[in-house]
Amino acid sequence: MQDHLSQTFAALADPTRRAMLARLSKGEANVSDLAKPFLKEMSLPAVTKHLKVLEKAGLVKKSREAQYRPCRLNGDALKGAADWMEQYRVFWEESFDRLEEYLKTVTPKKTAKGKSHGRKKK
Amino acid sequence: MQDHLSQTFAALADPTRRAMLARLSKGEANVSDLAKPFLKEMSLPAVTKHLKVLEKAGLVKKSREAQYRPCRLNGDALKGAADWMEQYRVFWEESFDRLEEYLKTVTPKKTAKGKSHGRKKK
DNA sequence: TCTATACTTAACTAAATAGTTAAATAACCG
DNA sequence: CGGTTATTTAACTATTTAGTTAAGTATAGA
Image: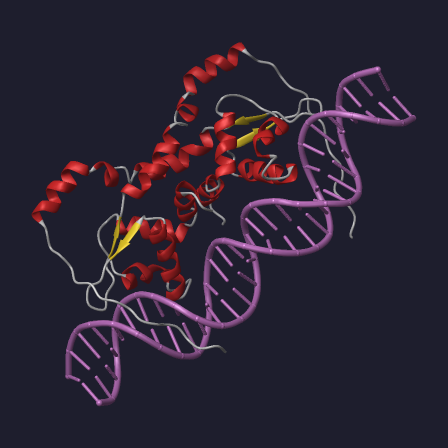
């Protein structure tokens, strides 16, 4: 998944990771703080792995403080993804224009049904 | 990957799929049109699969027109993701305030180095 | 009807993801 | 030093994802 943008979106495609970012948006937190809300659902190493995904995507920066690893959000890493989304904004904000446009071009299309497909066992 | 938001981000986490959306942002296109730029890198069924991921995420709507399947972008499906990102906007637009804040709290932290970790072969 | 075009599905495989448990490192603290 | 807390890593497994090829359906048109 080579490219940066894909890495960012992939990192965001998980509710646990998004929740961790939400927590970090309220301030720095170390690993066990971040893990606490999820320890009923998953182990600590699982949380470490999620954190690593966020780190590799640049979304989280980890530092060292004795045996703790304070983490903070790196908002800059979201900019690329936000910029990408931005170019599509017109496609969900066109509500009025779209309705207008739609009313001009009410061109219904046909429909059909399908049966079975594919191939037999090798 | 149950939730809608995760599904959206996961669908966006692939350059081929993003390129297909970019193409559709310029207008309706059928499957072979969409596939054309990728047929040197992958097969047509591979493209169909990518398209299905986009469809399941609601980002693309497919219709029927004789043997063709005209696809169009459904921008609305990006709104959820865009709204989610929006709440983090301050974290990449804070440049000035952040610098100001930073200059007030120059509190350097310690660092250290690590060796090997983990466990032996079972 | 026969054939070409458009697209999909099935069956399979390889690689990536997400989780696990056990063990290891690291730093503090009595 | 020895134990406790914080965190990571390794090794393993199961599931998902991304691709393949072969074969299927659907429609158009000579």
